[in-house]
Length: 184
Image 1 (tube, rainbow, N blue to C red):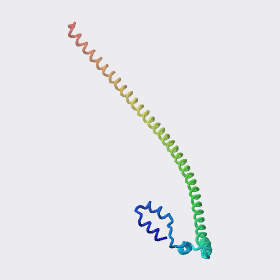
Image 2: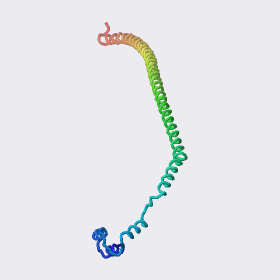
Image 3: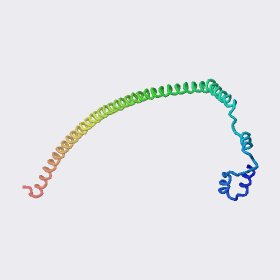
Image 4: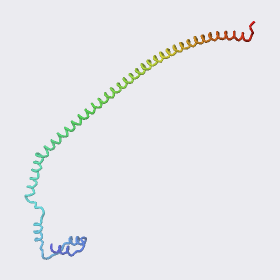
């Protein structure tokens, strides 16, 4: 029967045509049915006798051994690692809250320092403005005093000039009168 199947597969040109040929049972009068059953027993992939329970027990023992020797310590290690990481994350969150509080304190200190500096600058401006006003007032008084003194000097010089001019006018008018009017 196997030779008939192989012969049918080798004579076929296309694989599509070969598949139906392989599927068809080939009637062969030379191979009896019990011989075919014997050949199938020899070609069986799995032999389900006492080896199946032995392999199943071996598999279960291997599972238990691996669970106790490998997976349990590995799971314990991973749980400890997870707990450690969660703890560190919690510490980081606490630290971040502490950092936020420190940042708020720093901002408050900076705000207070800026307000203090602004107040000091305003005070200095007022003091400087008052100083400048005092110096300007003193300068104005000095300039006004010098101006009054200069005006007084000019007034006295004017009076002297007027007196001198009056004396010259009197002498000139006497000379003009003498020249214009002959002496009588």
